[in-house]
Length: 216
Image 1 (cartoon, rainbow, N blue to C red):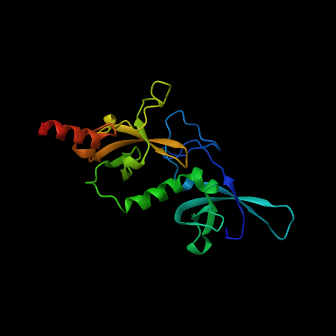
Image 2 (cartoon, rainbow, N blue to C red):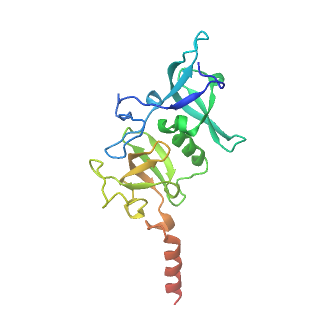
Image 3 (spheres, one colour):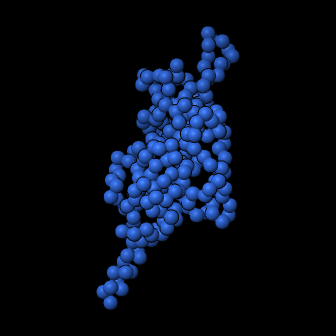
């Protein structure tokens, strides 16, 4: 069992077994159509000594979820990690690099932001991933881009990040999971436009200008 005193090594990966599990690499490729990782593919290496043998035996443990975070005395952020098949008593505090690629850090941080979101807040969208999972996100705090069939991005479309003109109900976009370093296809189910309309990010200023014109 993993314990807090044992050292974790960097995350590793396994090949896909479902639509939700991409073929995973130690450094994920950003080209191609990616799918989110799930707990069954969220694997972290763990070094364990057996029978006081000087030779370390390497074991793999699956991350079930992140249940907390803190900043230690050195200023490093640590994430309280629940391991698949183990209880809360076996939770350990892990640095970001040990669990980032699993996708659970992104999921945890979004769950914290979710507590302060309502569907009527401007810029908030309810999205549905291609596996059917629904999630509410504040697109003002996210990176998103237009979905391209085949997932092939070049200089003509790679830079089109956070283009508010593509956000509307029924639109298919890609949402970036920064710690996992992957983009994921999703559909905008509901969306509360910025300032009453879909804008390009400077809607507040445009709204002020329109009011001034009406006064004249």
